Length: 172
Image 1 (cartoon, rainbow, N blue to C red):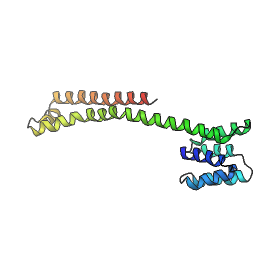
Image 2 (image 1 turned 90 degrees about the horizontal axis):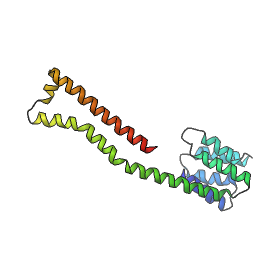
Image 3 (image 1 turned 45 degrees about the vertical axis):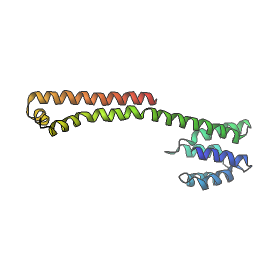
Image 4 (image 1 turned 120 degrees about the vertical axis):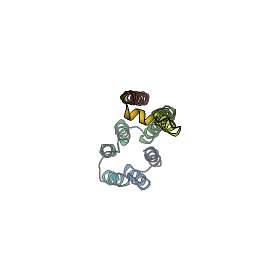
């Protein structure tokens, strides 16, 4: 999406009309090529670029074009330079992407810890079996083992859910 925003701004700044700018950007945007080509044809036929981009932005997976459409529509109606606004919008989108990437990197540690802690009981069982202690037999064949297995499973599941909750809240 960022490439589309910056490419549109560059084409408009180069003096290309909106329909031609959309067509040129469509030629380099692989996944959006058919949609942008159709939008370029509609704009060449007299449609408003902001409305065409909003139409594309309403399709699943294309929501990133909604702010582009809104910025284009407002700037065009106010008589401003669309290329300048699209450049600024691209910078904002890039900053948001970098912030999301930084947050994902910061949360990689807690996620790895969650996986490690969830797997430790299984590792303990394997280690106990390798030493000949028969922990699986205790857990499966005796009522005390069943209680330990149930409590351990509940605590392990609660730990995983708690960590997921913390990660989701951090992502918001």
